[in-house]
Image (tube, rainbow, N blue to C red; front, side):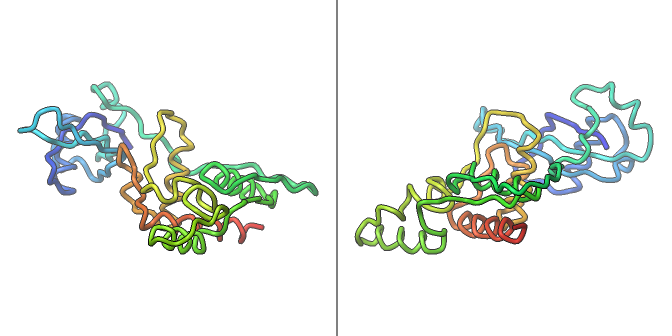
Length: 217
């Protein structure tokens, strides 16, 4: 599998167009590309009359992949992207996670995957009850100081439209995005340069991740 960067594609394109763009970048015939998928895409709007996607894609070719690695913007596709192997541990002591915002959620999930059965402490309510409290406040009701847009399961970001921005290039970011997709987030977050879960889907993803952690102990 080859990873190809800096492909230019129109705003409306399909799988055939993607495969053809990969073939052009590799200098092979269209029929030589047997598979292509988007890994990352972002909008290039520097010119109003030429708004386009800038795409990174993975592609398979019929033969000669090693010879194509010398081409510009082509490298081997990483293996196991989106997976994250965690060592298993046995301990009588259960770790404690303070808070169930984004960091707390994934700290608890990583510990649970490792078999350590974490205990999570959260001052606010579960996201279902919290959603009702926030909706009541926005409708003119009283503020609940322990269950609002700041405090509760999901953290402060649960009601701020679900943007997922980071400047780091750590491979574990893909694990987080894949986990969110397993919990109901839209699959487009796997390839968008600035992934966005959305306020309508984020509470459900938070609830599903909590249930995964509980199922693991």
